[in-house]
Length: 60
Image 1 (spheres, one colour):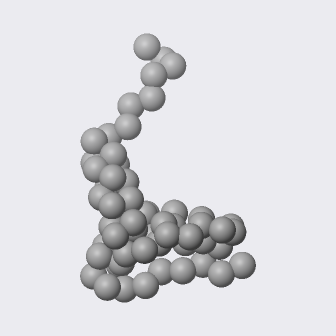
Image 2: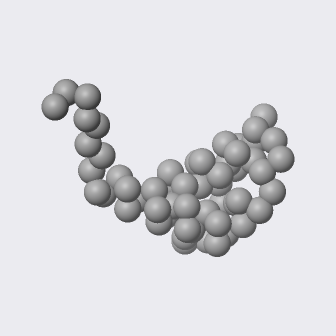
Image 3: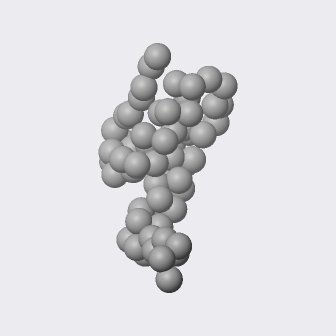
C-alpha cells in the first residue's frame, strides 16, 4: 500500500505530551495572533523546556 502514511507511536506520544504541557503552562490561553500560535507550536515541539519551567516564545 503506497498511499498509506505510517506515523511512529513515539511521535504521537511526543505531540500529545507536548500539547498537555503547553496547555498546562498557559501557552494556549490566548492565541490572538501569529506570534501566539507559533509560540504554542514551539512549546509543543520542545515540551521538555516548558516542563522544566523554562520559557519559549516567538515574537514577530
